[in-house]
Image (tube, rainbow, N blue to C red; front, side, top):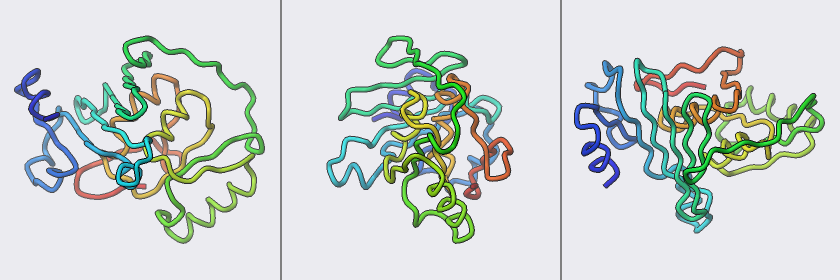
Length: 193
């Protein structure tokens, strides 16, 4: 359904989804739509409303528009350049100033998703923040964009797990990096940290 609607609007742009990501033809694409129809499968299956449908438009392999729809929450978030839109309305949130780690709220999907050495880093962070929240998937990033939480750390994400969120986060000038502080770069052959 989603792919059919997008194809009707932009028939010349290919669509990659979690289900079609193994297609070798996708490796050479520069401009395309990226879809994750259900991010937060466990939330969806258990009736928790924090699952979302994520769609991103990439140009020259860079995400330029990101969208997350939370049907159960009646929220449609769109990020583009410096714009963050919720249900068709521009959003602005209070900025936190001089935030220090001991006052920060940290979120992540699940500790078992981290490799052993990085789980040790996560435990160190947990010991130094105000509190941490497990679970939430793509909803954690929306809470981050709203300023309700301060830090999201994930590991071994696939392209469809993060790329649609990048324009939303960048609209709020939120840094998206790997463990070494480098900007995240994804391809469709491997998972990246």
